[in-house]
Image (cartoon, rainbow over all chains, first blue to last red; front, side, top):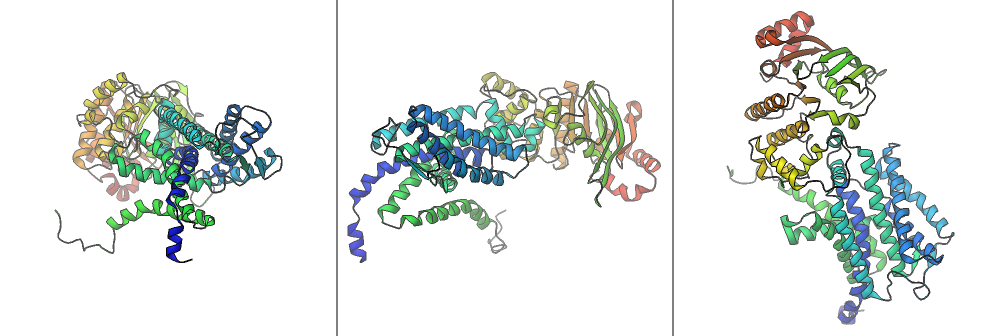
Amino acid sequence: MSAASYFSSLSLLKLAKSVPGGVAQGLIWGLMALGVYITFRILDAADLTVDGSFTLGGAVAVMMILGGCPAWLAVLCAVLAGMLAGFVTGVLHVKLGIPIILAGILTQFSLYSINLRIMGMAANKALSVDKYELLLSSRAIPSAILTSFAIAFVLVSVFYWYFGTERGCAIRCTGNNPALARALGINIGLMKIIALSLSNGLVALSGALMSQFQGFADINMGRGAIVIGLAAVIIGEAVGRGLLGKRLNFYGRMSFAVLGGVMYYLVVVVVLWLRLNSNDLKLITAIIVALFLAAPYLREKRKVSFRRGGKEGAASC
Amino acid sequence: MLKLEHISKTFNAGTVNEKRALCDLSLHLRPGDYVTVIGSNGAGKSTMLNAVAGVWPVDAGRILLDGEDVTGKSEHRRAGNIGRVFQDPMMGTAADMWVEENLDLALLRGEKRGLRWAVTKSDRAFFREQLATLGLGLEDRMTTKVGMLSGGQRQALTLLMASMKKPKLLLLDEHTAALDPATAKKVLEITDRIVEENRLTTLMITHNMKDAIRHGNRLIMMNQGKIILDIEGEEKKNLTKQMLMEMFQKVAGSTIDTDEALLTRNS
């Protein structure tokens, strides 16, 4: 195919049509990004449990709805299951001294078996919106956007309040300066466990909503979720800082973590629209995350570099 | 107020790196005692403070704080009664949190932290008033991230955080060593004022013999995990650096040649 025919085959209308679906998925992933924000930015720890707890949320929600449970209750149970997964990671780390990355990997690894069991040893469970009352579905995208936006708005507000409370400040202090936290009488192990539980509860919520949106739960639906979550957090942060600069407060930071999910999914929509191979998406995502993570380091290095040492010109003093 | 009874602590026991850090150490502080602690590197000064704070458990002995045996209590469970300022200005504050949030963390030292909104209006007024006493203009920067403050400002803030709840014991671990002389002097003035106004029982480690003599009502000198000198009252008031050196020589014997340089550093 020549370049001309390739470009003429791209229809802007088609792109416009796929944007709303991208926004809905982005908002749902944004909730998981909010969970990643709590561990990655507030607790200053990378928690790899999320790949497993995302699927866990989806599996629990789908199986309960299939079993005749109302969707809202199924989602609630999914959240509790996710919190339990985070709790396990927290206990492995805090009580058994396993480094947090390894603790997360262990929980995530074990969740593969658990999720399979929950789904009755099936790798995929379909959930038809025609037969069951779901909170949202890709069949009705506008209402899916509305629902996920409302949930995101409420949760960002709730967590803004939570991290402004005494307990929330203790968690932030634990992430920021654990030695000080101990000296102030804060039980830092407990704070880590609480933060990990809350984070994974959010991730499972995201998984529960996603499985309803796409109409199935899949054992692999959470694969690479942590990278997408990180991508959302980092992209959102960069855009938020670019738009608001110093006015970006804590509420803004969390909002932009969610919006980062939307932005990520819009990139995905464009990639698919360009008919790039969707199997390359993970590679592209990884490159984007690596670039954004490296940027602050490289910027700093450019400012303070030996190669340019002594060549800055006349002294500025 | 604080009683240390025959405390011992050995690090890396049974290895080539074995270090007897505290050796059958006993110390009794009366309420309101303001004790300066000197000694060469490795004498056990910081180790003694860490033992009191509960950074790790001691091997032998008992630690009593205001009559209560805290030997078996972990660090965060002792924290309610103990205020601490560290040598590194980065250590005593949470850099990514606001000045008022840091103060609020300290206001709840050792208390249950619930789901109440952390910094209330009345808290803010109280913090403003407290910050004003430092004379550093911090009362107008309450929503500045602490990471933006200078080392001296952070140390002064840490002092306030450590003393605001009137702890039974204030531990200062060379809290001016990382500051320039003028700032160190200012922070020491603030220290004296806070300790005296609140009548805090205080242990202050310093590397500066002049400071050790000038501040506090009592001076102890440590060597090889033991207290080798304990001077107070009139005797301490009349103390000079020269006398201190001679006393050290008499008690510690020949080690003076190597330790003199360390002891007189910064003075």
